[in-house]
Amino acid sequence: MQGWEIWLVPLIAMAVWILGSLLRGGLEERQRDNLPRPGPGGGPEGGRPSRPVSDLERFLEEVHRRRQAAAEKRERESPREPPSSSPERVESRPRPRSVPAPVRPPPPPRRPPRPAPPPVAR
Image (cartoon, rainbow, N blue to C red; front, top):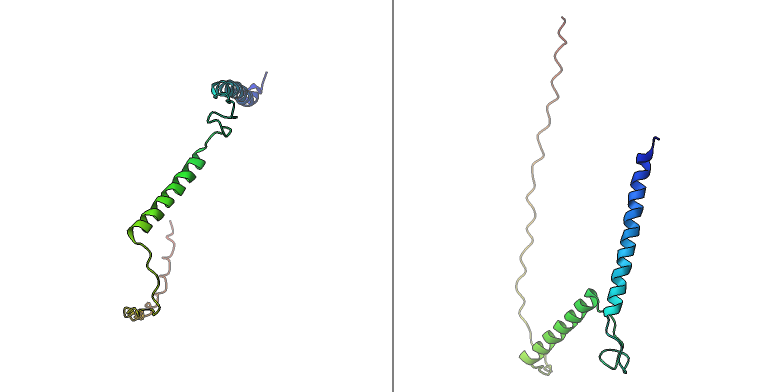
């Protein structure tokens, strides 16, 4: 019986897929059993239903919290002053002059290649 090697790879792949789906189903069932039961309010906190928090949601909440903290810190450090009626003149720094790039001389002309030596007769 020739050609059994050809069927071996797809057979192994299918066995791995079936075992993976069986194990994943068992894990999902265990996780579902471990979830807290909703109380009289609809969720574990009482008022709102529970939902899983993903890494992305946690990251976005952390960014939002840090931005709010930074804004509060800025407000505490420098209280806002009312804008004055006459704008103050701010001295500007002198701008550096733009210096033109140095001009390079053109490259020397190339020498023509040397002719190949004549073939040697044997």
